[in-house]
Amino acid sequence: MKNRIIQTIAMSLCVGLISSAYAQQPRSGANLNAPDAPPPSTKTSELLPGEPAHPAPGSWGYDAKTGKFKSPDMAPDAYGAHPVPGSMTYLDQNQYIKNVKVEGFQPYVAGAGHSWQASFDMDGHRYLYDYETWMYNVFDITDPHNVKVVQQKQINTQAGEHQFGPFNVKFNKKLNKMIAVQCYEISRYGLLWNKYLYADQVKKVRDKKMLRGFRIYEVTSPLWTDWKVLSETSLDPYHSSKDQPQEGSGCQDVPVYNGDQYLFVAGAPDNSFANTEYKTYLYAGGQMAFDVSDPSNPKRLSMWWAPGSRLGEEDEYKKNPRAGNKTSWMGSRMPLFIPKPVEQGGKYGYAAMGGFGFYVVDISDPKNMKAVAHIDMPVSVTGTEGDNIDVSKVESTGMVYYSGYPMTEDCYEPLKAIYSIDVRDPLHPKIVNTLPTPTPPKDAPFTDFCQRRGSFGPKRSGYAQIQPGTPSPRYMPYSYYNAGMQMFDVKDPLNPTIAAYFVPKMIDASRKTTDGQTLSIRALPNPVHSIFVEWDRNLIWVFSNHGIYTLSSPLLGEPVFGMPQAKK
Image (cartoon, rainbow, N blue to C red; front, top):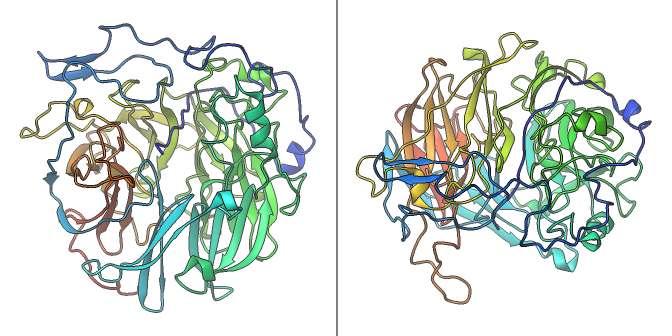
């Protein structure tokens, strides 16, 4: 399923609030976007009051004279294809490469629109997980030229089997154990299609029985089914992990865990965190810190959220230009992005809060997280406007890189940018520029990636907290949907360039669906939705809608085929 999450922009000054304080806040109140509101009678095919209008014909599209594509200034959430004159009428089967070598290919797909990855080393082997909430693949990638399938599993959630959530695995030196922290979140699709229209679906989400939080495991083998559950923790402070149903969203995306004392996760702990516009989601998440020095007994330390997130904070919420548009994702989508762990002297985390913008959060005392700076990011509706922050270059350049990602096809939304933000003075961050927009090579049968079909724009640069090794201080790969993997050179932050790329074919046209039909241009619109970088082996794993590519690049250095040597 295409991952469709739409976020937005901006708010005002932020406040740090700890968990004891938020427990005292009201848990209900009037709200223009309240999921409790009676559904309007508008048909689902029609725009609801407040939604962005469809862009006027002629105001966007491909210009054959210039070879460039003009994106709409604003557009509603409009799932599906939006071809225009100049759009390709077939699936491009070409592959485009610059400064990259393909080392291997594996025909396995865990998710066509999105999947997560994680790796860990055990008994002289390196294992890679590629997974979606309903299935996963485990590979032994010790020798990248001889990848072995270790385990494959599909999750039968309809039969009550617990879904497979995003996880982080680290070796805990103090405990001398491999520890995994795994998030569980209410489904963003399939349960609720439009909260403004279907009160019964809202009730279905709230009544769903599941863990809305995280599990901690002792990792005893490469097989997830062998892991030992050490604890289950609900993010809902009013209901334990045993209580059903629990309130809130659950734990969003990959948790931040360094194998030490502290754990950082994102999510909405109860139903009062409801000020978000997005139609299929009820919650505006915040950021939470836990003490997991005893993995069998995690302790909540504090929570911070963007002002305006909760019922009762409507005066603050209405200051946001997205209030009432029934389109924008407000609040967290992922946990804090932390360049240096608190246990090693790290002081700041960076938060991408969707429509609430960019925040610098002081995490030096996890018992009292507090925001110290905020930027209202430029408006870009529809599409996700605040999701990922690459913090791997803070030490070398003082820059972090903030981005959302496209949610529609054929560039039927404002072009999504990667913003360079100077945080050398963390109390006064500032946007410096944007990274260059990828353009097709001259031998491509199109002159703008918007013509290639599917989605075009940045997804993520991988998950810095779980990718092994030390990131390059200069090069930064990103997954870029129909533009494949794009690697940016940010040695000079004021003059960033694209140094390498790998753009695979749109899809394997020979592949068949389960009923024997050939996949069509509408079947899988996002050729590359994720990457995973082994910085210690100079390898990039690219996850496409038809399989997994293994890449090396001379820019990163000689690839390591085998286990990397341990640091002395």
